[in-house]
Length: 268
Image (cartoon, rainbow, N blue to C red; front, side, top):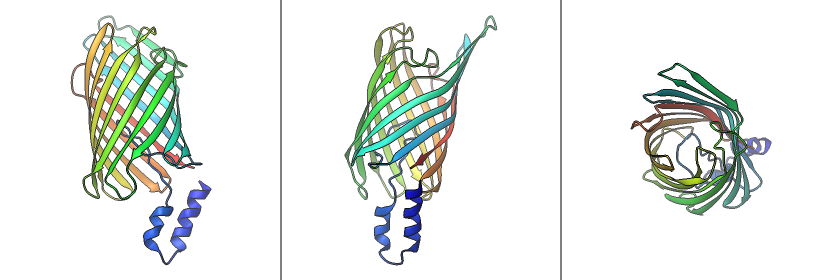
């Protein structure tokens, strides 16, 4: 944080060479609050935290209503190379409440969630160029019990691609394929999705993104296709701090009815 503020102070004091100042700004590129991924990596020697202060999801089905709440979902990103970063994500606390509509019985589970290890590699694109692409591989350890955690090991790969149509408007497509954990806690199955988003930059500090997500989940006892629409906004009061919010809604019966996420990111 001190280093970042030092850069900003130095920039404010400079009276010449203004076009070069952008090169001295810290590379601050949170993945949140979008549903999709990002190819942007943290600079070597810097640490980037992303936190969900509240992540609430409601799944309203004909026979039951489920409310899933997560707080203290903390993602740590560390730059280890010019275009490479390591990630560690941990869900600090979750609460799942399921109400059976026929019997009015309520089942509640609480606890910590899983830990996910990931490596992200930026493959193409540089500052000033419209196209960028990357790849991210991850593995999730079952440190939390279902339904807060997955209940078993899982792994997957994410491929994000972005193209800036104008200085303010960009389109992004993220593809993901997972060996996802079965709900039984035994074994894995194929799950894959594609997320398409449009990002609009109102100012250097305020952006908004609209996204459409299509996911196929081949759970052994219940194959499902889930469609979601999401709208998110981010505000950066400083060059190293972001506050954000996301709202998503299901577009078909299999998808969760509603999801709301608040949080932010900070760079050290």
